[in-house]
Image (cartoon, rainbow, N blue to C red; front, side, top):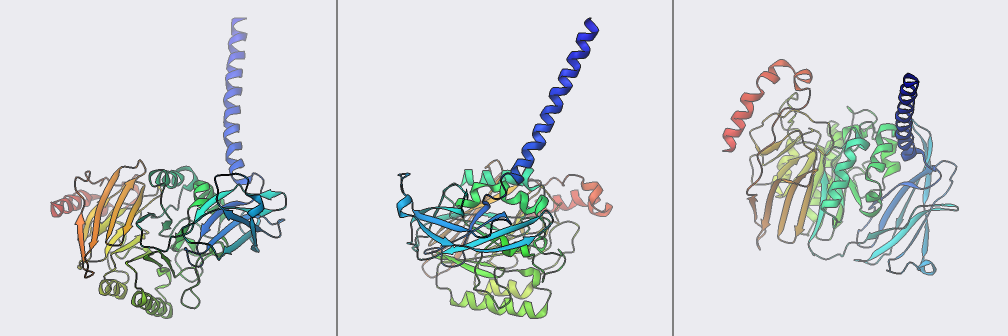
Length: 454
């Protein structure tokens, strides 16, 4: 009898354990498949002026043939329905690796600057929840934004935590900038966009996104001319671009700041290279605001330990120096580095948001480096000062500096003080992923770098 009771208990425990595993799988499926007719992957971008407009895009199952945005000036009262306005979205369908989806996009114009609006998207019986956005003030008031390097892999399981912790740390951020490789396979939803947007969830519904394409947003990650259809269906970016480069090379003017996105994946093609260069020079020449930030995916210098060293875009480097660009935000190397390359400015930042990490090559120009960390960058902007922080997923400050501008426009760099020890341990599976000579020389190279830093 005792043996029978013992066997029964084991069966009961096994059954409970099995049930728990099934529940976990089911919950993961709900994340991606619950009510596909309902609007999901709702996100804010800008197609036109952030002071007077707001672009919104979302996805539904393809049985939904049209979409609508309802919006109203936000009030503390929940009884605002009689003041709601509507705008119809443009709807398109696209078949990807999982199924055919309907993608909806609309740009709300004629908004008041410095004003918070409530909005929802959908139609018929299927609507999103109400969310809020705030238009830019159009003044030179101080503000903050967040920069992310590559998210790319293991997006929902680990990439999500950097998106969420960044917003918890900087809840007053006006927008987010992504430096490319948001996903690993730009033409696929499964494990890619199907994880990226749920990973950030409501964040994308409330805080606008600016993103530059990475090589992995292309159908072929080694090409530069086949930016995936999913990029254009998911995002509604400006079309103030060189002809044929719309929504990939573009600029956004937010108050006194210009943010320029360059799709440097197209640099390898001579005609594209010239078009991007000429357009960039014109945008720098014409801008009369306080600050220009430039973002593109490939770091100016290859820094992953198994890549060949060298300046990738020399004529752009010279252009940025000529116009005293304060800050260039890049990714691709899956590590952290910050420094200046033989000129007072720009400061080049290479960062990584996701869990996939590379071992570093300790280039001479690096002023601070880091490996084996998920990071986000908080950037505070005022008319005469940029205050930059790089923070870990735990919210701890890893790097910090200021760039100050005097009345004559002269820039001064001020390094942060009391920064923590640099995290320079080689990445997981280092010895398996890298050639033996790169492994054996790592300690010597690290010591020489630290000696230079001292």
